[in-house]
Structure formats: C-alpha cells, structure tokens
Length: 391
Image (cartoon, rainbow, N blue to C red):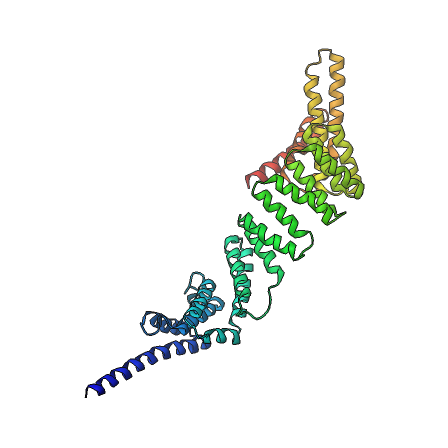
C-alpha cells in the first residue's frame, strides 16, 4: 500500500508539472493567434510556479510575447512592458542559460528568432532617433549589435549599423562611445571621410580642441585634395578665434575653388568681426558677384557699410570745424546710401529675418532726415518688425 501511495504521489507531481508546461505551450499558441492577454496570463502564472519558473521554455515564451507586444497595434498589449525588446532579449538569454542541452538554441536558430529581433531593434532605433530620443536610440542600436554578433543570428552585421550607433551615441552626448564606433567604421573603410569628420565633431563635444585639430590635419594625407577638410579647418580656427590660421586655409581654399562664393563670404564676415570694413567690402563684393541671390551675403555687405559709417560718425563728433564736419556727415550719409540696396535685397530674399529688418529700420531712420520719402518706409518696417517680435 505504501508503494502505491508513493507511486501515486509521483504521478500527481508529474501531471502537475506537465499541466504547467502545457500552459506555457498554450501561451505560444495564443501569441500566434494574437490573443496576447491570454498568453500573458499563462506566462505570468508559469513564472510564479515552482515547476516552470526556471524552465527555459517559459522564458522563450515570454520573449515571444514581448516581441509580439512591440509589433502589436493594440495599446493595451503595447503597454505590457516598458521596453519590450530589451525584455525579450534578456528572456532569450536567460532561457539559453537554463538549457544546458541546447534545445532552445536550436529552436531560436531554426525559427530565426534573433533575426526578427534584430529587425525589431532597428525599427525601434530609427523611430527613437527621429523622435530625438537619442539615448533610447543608442540603446536600441547597441543591443541590435549584440543580437547580430550572437551565434544565434544568421548573417553578418551591416557596417551602417555601427555608423548609426555612433550617431545616436554622439547625439546623446556619449562622445567617447561615439568615437569608438566611428573609429570602427573608419577601420572598415565605411563612408570614406565621413567617419573621420564625426570623430572630429565628437572630440569637439569632449572639449578636446587639440585632438579635434589633429584629426583634421591628419586627413590631408589620407584624402589629398579633399576640399571639405579645409572648410572644416577654417570653421575650427574661426570658432576658436585663430584668425591667422583661418585666413591661411581660406587662401588655400580659394586657390583650389575660386568659384566658391562661400569662401569670400566667410572672409568678409570675419573682417567685419575684426572691424576691417574695407577688406570686408572687397571680399563680400566678390561673393556677391559669384552668388547675387544669397540673403546672408547681402546682409553682411550692408552691415559692413553701416559699421564703417558708424565708426566715421564717432570720429566726426570730434571735428570742430563746421565745414569739415559737414563734409564728414555727407560722406557718412553716402555710405549709408551704399548700404541700402544690399539691405533691401537681403530683406527681399529673406523677408522674415529680424536682423535684416533691424538693419533696414536703422537705414530708413537715418536717411529719412535727408530724404522725407524714406519716412513711410521707416514706419512700415518698424511696424512689421514690432509685429514679428510679438509672435
């Protein structure tokens, strides 16, 4: 009789375990049918039961549920897990740990589960990047790399993934991490010079200007004749107020690309900032010859004239002789007249630009005292500027 009871107990335990495992299997069926609520109920119970809480298939089923909730259009299902793909990946890895015989690994490979998971992470990463959730995007892409580097993934990694991960990391302020990914891209010769520029930008993000500069200067030997390198160096030197170095490269860039109006514009704008207005006017005149329909160039031309007039106006205040003073005022007004067509052209090309309107307002204000016909123009631009600034 005692043996009978022991046998009965063993059968009962076995049937109980089978019952719980059957629930896990039924959960997989519910997932295929789209009944994720029933699947979650069964899996949650299995994770609490002593007989199935450490069973590898329980974690496989939960991983499948997590992926299904990610692709579902049902808000209730979507809300099951805060980060369903990370949860899915962790479940699969946990299940693999609990299966020393390797049957789960075979299932994952045969069903190409990690391939699907990698695609899900790619979708999530792009979506988060577009939403400017750069930390989240980086997390998605980084985990996608782990999935694709696994021996359960069928295929290799597209180098673009390393580049996208670097972009997400850089935008998230993870500059050192971003540099490592872009260095990997450079080693794999992906994207030509672009990864090096990204490395340069991320060193700037770290505040390491010297290292950023060394990256750029080293590119001349790797990519001889590349105009973009010179332009980046010009920008770096101007940003750091190394004007002499900037003009050295501006000169080099002009020789290599004499038809590039932007180079003359940059030189002219730099001279304006230095208070060298005659040199600025010479450079901007050339820029306008090359590209007459650029609002920025037209504005800087007007600004150079206005600043020059302002300097002369300050000096004129010290002139005691009335005739000399009147002559100086006439010269100043003539310079303001020269500025006018450029300011008006800039306003025509960019009618909502506040700086251009302020420039025009000042010109009309000064010129209306010499020519009353400018008074209505002054009133109009003043009203337009006031209305725009209230928005």
